[in-house]
Amino acid sequence: MRIHAEQALLPEGWARDVVVSVAGGRIATVQRDVPGGRGCLIPAPVNLHSHMFQRAMAGLTEARTAGQDSFWTWRTLMYRFLEQLSPEDVQAIAAQVMVEMAEAGFGAVAEFHYLHHGVDGQIYDDPAEMAARIVQAAKETGLGLTLLPVLYEQGGCDGRKLAGGQLRFGNDFKSYYDILEASSEHVKVLPDGRTGVAPHSLRAVSRGSLAQVAGLTSGPVHLHIAEQMAEVTEVQAAYGARPVDWALANLPLDGRWCMIHATQMTAGETAALAATGAVAGLCPITEANLGDGIFDGTGWRAAGGVWGVGSDSNVRISLREELQLLEYSQRLRDRARAVLADARSTGRVLIEESARGGAQAAGRDAGRIAPGAWADLTLLDTRSLALEGLQGDAVLDAFVFAGDDGLVTDLWSAGRHIVQDGRHIARDAVAARFRKVLQRLRGAL
Ligand code: ZN
Image (cartoon, rainbow, N blue to C red; front, side):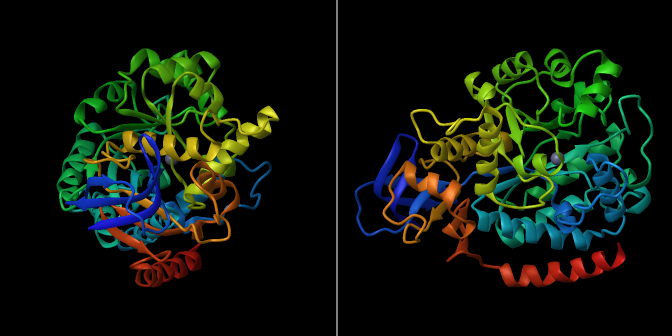
């Protein structure tokens, strides 16, 4: 297969009239100076953090329920909602989410998967039934998947038992291991699929298990950390250190790790965490939606930190809006413009760095248009009004800050051409099934 673009963002910079040949899902060759292509070809970033089932409750938690609304009231509705979800529902929702991610320009997803069990915590015959459904959705939609089964043991740092909706997430170390093993088997049907592990957070996993869980895999290790001030206070009271300080002192952090959110960090924590090589997994839209706070993007990048973006709650699925909001949050805080730009423009920094960090976080050999990498590629419509006459960095600035998601005309995930002319190839069938799930769920709330 050949992809022929008018311009392309290669590791060494912009090139014109580029032909990318793909074999076995990977980029085989990259030729320049072959006129006659169309569009602007960029590496498609991985969406590094998602809880797909939450897409079905997007937009339902925007009213105040009791006093000052907060993350915690959001979580209450989420628990009520997920009592309704069957494995079939999860597959239908996951497929819809994957279609939307591909149409937004994401080349793959790392799913932080914690809805393991039936209602009341009953274990399915296949303990990885829910994981299998997500794998099936990836197979149907062709979006690359790194599956991260989540270890969730307790209701807080004090070791309190899980209750209510949390029972569907809960495992001890042994039952978690069974799910991880069975998940790895399921993922084998995906040629580019991977598994990793995800200890949910310092609150939900005991210190003993946190020390062991990374040893269960050679794949990525993802952990929610320092998202909300309440979490900082709880961890500090229980363990005597702020969450990131505690992780730095007690966990074998390196480039395999992805620290999700890392919003609440001191300057010292920011520099020390960046130096470990761990990826900061940022979810700007969800973090804004939940009122988490502003990640220190300038401090992180100054310390050489690697980062990428994910859509987390999936309240909105848009690559360009995640990147735009990351930059805008820095501008609003600093009262400055082009805060994340360097010798490259802001849009280019955002695309290049999120592609690199997303691939690292997913343990996926991608994020660059170069021989050997998975062919995760996004094509932008340079015939559109938003991109008319633009070249190089200016294309990405216009895409991120002035465009819309319709600028993504084509997307390949490990060479699978799943978005064509702006539409996922299975969009209608997947949407029809998702609509039925929404009708039932919303009727039941
Ligand atoms: Zn999350």
